[in-house]
Amino acid sequence: MQNSLNSPSRLNPLEADILRTILYFDIFSFPPTFDEVYHFLPQNSTSAELVKDTCQGARLRSILRHQGEFVQLASRPNFTAQRLDREQRAAPELRRARLVARGLQFVPFIRGVFLSGELSKGLASPHSDIDFVVVTAEGRLWFVRSVLAVLKRLFFFGSKRFFCLNYFVARQHLEHSERNQFTAIEIATLRPLIGFSVFNEYSRANQWIKDFLPNSLKVSRPQFDLDQTSKFQHLAESLLDLFLSDRFDQRLMNLWKWVWMRRYPELSDEQRERQFRSLPYLSTAYGSDQMNRILEAYQARIAEHHLSSN
Image 1 (cartoon, rainbow, N blue to C red):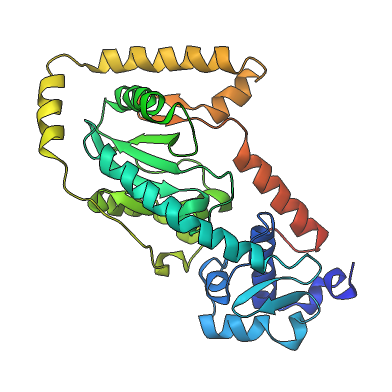
Image 2: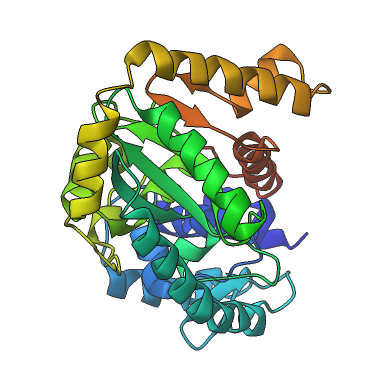
């Protein structure tokens, strides 16, 4: 390891924050731009211009390399070409996500759909999925999840590539309970596809992300907003409300719990509870414990470079 990395006292607070930010994105082999480093700094004590100047300054020269607007660790392979390729791959995937969102506009009880994951950051790997955050009406979350699971099976043959059902939340419970850097970055990079007003509610409910990313609310969020619900959706909801009830939604939730228990018997009860959260107002479904894996990898990088966790 280079001597500069073994001497954290040589770095001033801004330099240390810049390094922390770049270390996080290094987990994904993702060289951020100078502007992205600024937006995802853990503390707000600077400007975008000063961040760029500091990245290029003599004190970080032995630690970082930059190519054009991209910056990364000098000790790592150059990931710039890979990032540019992932940006190119994202264009058709974004069009596909918009098309899927137009279809979801007709599904009863959906109030908002936001693009998440890699694609929300304008990137797509060869085998990446299209991940959505789906906001539902209160008391209808598990009905919506079940309907979308059927539609996914019918139209996408169950493939996650075009339609990944990871996160559902009821409109009256938008505040995220897991507060950490990973969750903050995922929320900060969401792209609204349906329901911009609902997206604004979601953002207001999760203002806590400023504790981790004080500059994140200045990020420009490209959007493909379809804010108006369809007439078909209104009519279908009026009819379905004659037959549906909160008790029925509870039964669907219990059914999904049973499905996941059968599908993932290798998971402990604690793992299953963490990866497949099942509440009347919240449903998560992650085949792996990605969040904790990434946070552990980040803490390992922080320790390796003799920085505090901040």
